[in-house]
Image 1 (cartoon, rainbow, N blue to C red):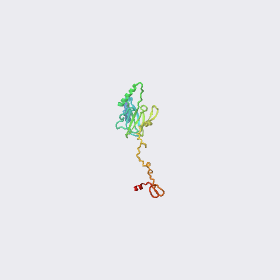
Image 2 (image 1 turned 90 degrees about the vertical axis):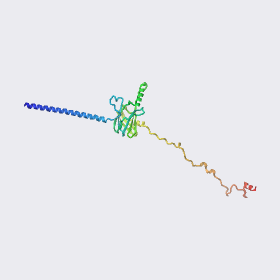
Image 3 (image 1 turned 120 degrees about the horizontal axis):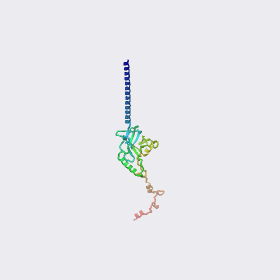
Image 4 (image 1 turned 180 degrees about the vertical axis):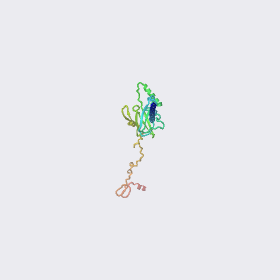
Length: 266
C-alpha cells in the first residue's frame, strides 16, 4: 500500500515538473517571437524612411539643422534637390544621392544644415557675425530657397522655405511654377504659396517690337506726273472759220511781212 502511494506521489511530481517546463518553454517562445517581430518592424520602418540630405546621427548633431517633410504631388519625378541662403549666388551640390530619385506621391524629409562647411556659408556666417557685433544693427532673419530639377530636365525654385513654421508641406506644380501648401504654426491657418511663386517666377523674354510704319523705309515709287502735265505743252492750231491761218495777207495773196518779196527783188 505504501509502495502504491509513493508511486502515485512520484508520478504527480513528474507531471507537475513537465507542465512547469512546458509553460516556461512556451513563455520563452512567445518572448522570442515578439522580439523578432519588433526587430522586423524597426527594420521595415528604417528602410521606408527616406531623406533628402543627410540626417544627423544624434540629437546634438541636429542642433541648428533644419528639417521639413515634403510630399511630392507635382506628378513628376525629382532628380535633384538643393537649398541655399537667398543671399548666396550659387546652390550647393545635389542633396540626393547618385541615381536616387524623389518619386511622385512619395514622402521624404529634407535635412538642411545652414552652417555647412562651404565657402558661401562661411562668408554668410562672417557677415552675420559682423552684423551681430554692431550694437545698432538688429538680428536679420535668414531666408532659404530650394531649387528642384525634374527628370525631364526642367527646374523650379521655391522661395523662403517655412523652416520652423511647419513640419510637413505638400509640393505642387502648375505649368513651370512650383509651390507648397502647409499649415502655418505662426498664422494658425493653411498657407498656399502659389500666387507668391507666380509673382517671383522669371518672366519670358519679350520679342522685339516690330518697326512702326513711320520707321520703315519707303522704297515705293510715285508714278504720277501731275507736275509735268502735258497740258503745259499743248499747241493751239485753231484758225479762222474758213480754215485760213493767221498769216493770211491781202486779197491779192501777198504776205504782210514782205520778207520774201524783198529777197526776190534784191
